[in-house]
Length: 179
Image (cartoon, rainbow, N blue to C red; front, side, top):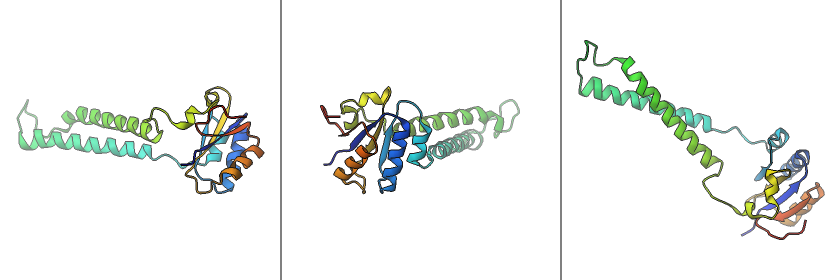
């Protein structure tokens, strides 16, 4: 199985230029690791907007409808009780639980979505085992070209990355690689 190619860059501008060039060469599966937010890198990656807000909204709305419906079914339809002269279906009594269930299910969906979409459910991967990769949290900018990328020709991609100013180009998980 082929390994991902990692390239280390000194600045976000160099990383963004490399991403633009590789995307122009039909590389679609690129991932950037940066120590701080870099808008030019985000722009170069040209990622589609996340659908997570829509999923969170749908989960909250579904929970609200189900909570209200269950309360209505139990309190107003199956077991109506006259309490304080109020009608069995008194909407204000159902607001608190409906609101709480909306917030609960929306927030649980958001947490699960962030974990899954951010690929945080795994403990480690081969990229993190690469020598020097820890600099991605301090002062260096890394680019990963996935081995599943349709446009990946490993020697040509390595040469292109070196030509674009990469400080070093290594395979994911390599230890003791030369810069």
